[in-house]
Length: 253
Image 1: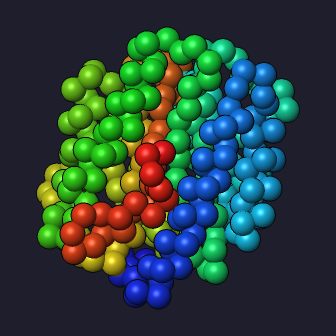
Image 2: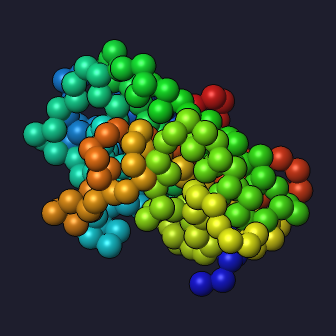
């Protein structure tokens, strides 16, 4: 699939889709607490998406059985919500969600602290978020894609963290996953030239320990190989003539 450059009409629809998803993440943040199940988080997120007029784009995507990916502690991504998984004080939980609005996709992820979290894990969450913002300093027309990748890796690795290589960001538009793939680690070459109208889902996945990961027997859940915590932060980003626009980020979330 070629890299698509969106028209002004398409950008407007993607902006609406992204703003709705930001509302969902803002609301989900408020229910994160010790004692809630990951299934409850999924149900609430699904209802919010539908109430806003969206369609949950993760549900049944290649067979994924939920609307919100809920990944706890050493689960990097694609955790499957369960009535049996209860959040505890000291956990971290990554929520990856998306929706379709009038045919256009949005995609974003956040990692939240549950109660009193150990300082080294709190730092991991903060550094993962900041690595995204280090990366998007280069998400501008005239720069090249892999400048984003390098900036993410340079920042995260300066703390001694492992940058996941088996999973990456992606283009997004009328499909959830479009070209180009967006690694979070250094690449040979510079990658494609960025131009206004490209829409990219940029999503660092950073581990406290090794960069290596395992796939669980459920076929979806990705976990760190050393079972140390992992954090995830993602926004749908519009390339413009100037600074990038975060379509799924209103305010400071």
